[in-house]
Image (tube, rainbow, N blue to C red; front, side, top):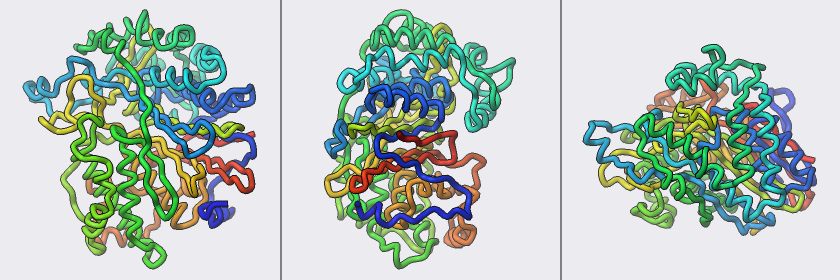
Length: 535
């Protein structure tokens, strides 16, 4: 048993919460119980972890249509055999060939809004699904879409968190006629226990199931997508869609108290999670108060996000190497900037705030493990729907900026900075965990926070995901209502501005492996409708 697993606190049954899921065969976790049940059936039918992840995600495109879809992007981290030989699939789409921040500047536009055509990069999800299955799938491609086709055609019952999010986006869903026709019910948001259908999306899934990559990026689906984009003054072309691709890249690695953290490299923000953890490791949390710990975490997070906004971009445009940021001397320099008595203020970030995505993870009975994330960026993405295909476009291009010469400036055929980051952890050259923390740009901070709660304080996976969260968001601390009030008061005395957001901060799923006892531990936090389950 790893040192991490050996020191976990047991559940306190006098407090609200839920137990970890346990299994000795296979385990999965997603943000929606229907998706989890579909994944379990795939595994029991002989499918592997990749098959289950793809089928689950397709169902989530219907069950959580505000969070994910075929019109979005995808990242995945994969261990084919359960070893630390891990690779990352970058399925983030590029801007179109005619994209230009210069044109926006000439029109006095400095911020890319979600409903602008400039916010819609070429969706990379389907390209990544195809590559993932081609190289590592086991079941026939067509069969993986059967559950999603069924639910899109017959409908899926709207669950509680989904209904809550739907109700908060009524205005956005009313702006585009095709979106309103699909995602509103007699002009109102779908409610808890309503039956939501997307019959046109079932036809799109049918076409993808039959034709794979070409079924989405060519033919009638692509024509429908381009026609919609052109109708809102988008400069996207069939050539842009034809050039869509996904690629395997090498994960970043960092160590935190002898636990190795595997993160997706830029253009993802996994580097930010490693920077935060590297700064935290400079402090001994056994000898300080909870208020001191929370202050240090917040200041380290501010530093990580400050560096992200200055330097992070598509790898072709990064000015500094990953090694530069994780250099021990650089980390020492930034850690020394933390004033234990006073909160530091940084320039306001121009990076768009958004809390939305899905994350799922699967480990099958042969050890194959996948950490998988698919997103539309904002809730209901751009709010723009392609009518015949039932595809809702993401707005990932909103993460670009319009600053001339900035590494993340909007330019042609370029990937924007991405917030979605799957992750894994290992110890003594053995893979011991697969996890993700949802919540848009919160994710890097969430990775560091959840891991620190486990490694530093012995919280078990379910408790660590459930634990009240804090996020330094543009020099204001977003704090969940269950957070320790004494700590909050101490933070105020150190100059931290406090905000209690109406929404919970993010979500999360995790699978942890105990090889010595042959046990898989699954967890899915309370902030979503999710479910961890094994067999």
